[in-house]
Amino acid sequence: MNLSKIVRVAVLAALSSSLTACVESLDARRGPGVSPAERLAFARDVTGEWSDASRLVAGRLLEEYGAPDEVSRDRLIWRGNAPWRRTVVTNIQPPLVSDDRELGVLSQTVRVSLSPSQAAAVEAIDGAVVYDPRGGELTARGDREEVDILRLNLAVDVAESRLSVDEARRAFARDLLLEASGKTVEDMRTLRVAGGP
Image 1 (cartoon, rainbow, N blue to C red):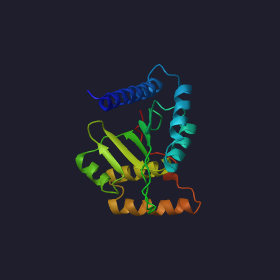
Image 2 (image 1 turned 135 degrees about the vertical axis):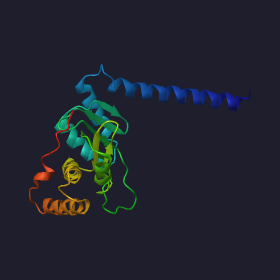
Image 3 (image 1 turned 30 degrees about the vertical axis):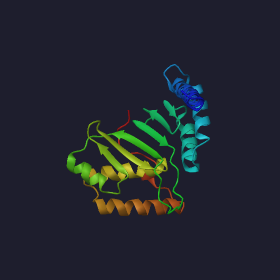
Image 4 (image 1 turned 90 degrees about the vertical axis):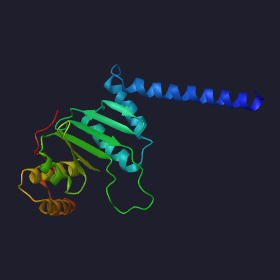
């Protein structure tokens, strides 16, 4: 073996060891033996390096729900944080050219049972609500908790035939405009789905 191969092998071994230590550090800080205060501090450290949109959402949820159950380099997860079965904030980098669409950094899940036709109708609203029949979970993805609440409330209205898909789309747009004008929109404040933990 020549000297350059030996050096490359040594460098790769050192990098591998360093990477393993970083991963073990991450795992240790999100494991079951880690205190909520340690997870909260670690979550704040990790999210300090996130995109602006993801960092802002994570900061709001850390204030509201406290320490997440899991912390990783690109994700915070809370389980059983009522009214939610699960809340996930993901670090998503915005596209270089912004078109004001949501990034979908926040996903929130409730437990609800839907038939295949109900699930298809719900998913047809705008693609930001997805049903998982295996777990009986309905998940909304947006950039704010209020928007997730609105999406899930409208999804249940569609599933229970109180609104058509088109009516739900119009109600969503209307409610966002009302909120932007400073009005209180009850469907953005109170989740009408009793499907938490």
